[in-house]
Image 1 (cartoon, rainbow, N blue to C red):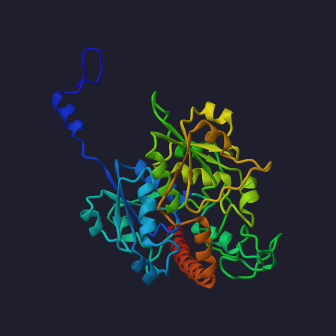
Image 2: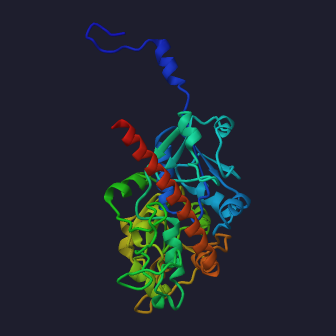
Image 3: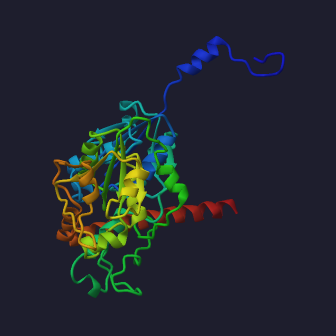
Length: 390
């Protein structure tokens, strides 16, 4: 109804109905192996489609049965998904191939999946039943990142990677400006093939918390590489947050990490690492390209109360001039060390990949073959539909 001036006026009954509006419950499901910012971005998009986000994560047993052993075990994968700031609930051991009955079980309104193609053992598109029932919504795949790509980068960590003349992801021969370059792929599938991530201020804004520290908050600062952001990092940041109210992570530059870690580190560049860390619910702000040595200026600028360093899998190299990077916070009495209680490290993940090189190559090639068969079928159906219209 409207008042005398033509403005809409809601009755008490209408206001009451609006106030008790049923929250929209959204469901996602997946392996979420080696969770990266692409996974996080799909989950972020899914949360925007509703009010409450439920994420189902497959068990190790199911992944081994249908796909092959995952890089990260189920305990690590459950922890990573719970750590994403957009997730409200995690379903452990969710069925590998989702069924409509799951929607009733979790009281979900619809299921969300990316624009990439997934197929069942018979080669059919996995979400066709949800589409037919009007219970499916699509989010956009994040271009420039995939688990396949990250695996390829790690397979190049061997001492002889510069001599390889084949794609480390698939084992196929390649032609590239630099032998073994991961930016080149013989894969034809747009979903399995690798590409280059292009950062933008828009996506940084989407991932940023936008939360400012409140007066009286104790501000915690943690600096490091946070490469291949994993469950060990999550445990460390959760412990760091217990010391205060607001966590700032300082990310070292790629060149600085290469100086103290050597080899081909970091696996992920600074833009990729920034998004991965920003997606964590224990982090409020990120300093991109923070100085290796913690300076008085940095402490004052961010009003830092406590500087935290981990005790496990943390080897602190001296600065270029030989000084201790934590010298100033130690002198000020604000330096603390915390135990994440996790043995997982970036090096352990790399070792897992290298130790199972052939297995991952076979898995990725089989995945692409399934995708290409379905792409061919979809293209044929499209052509037939066009022919009928004409």
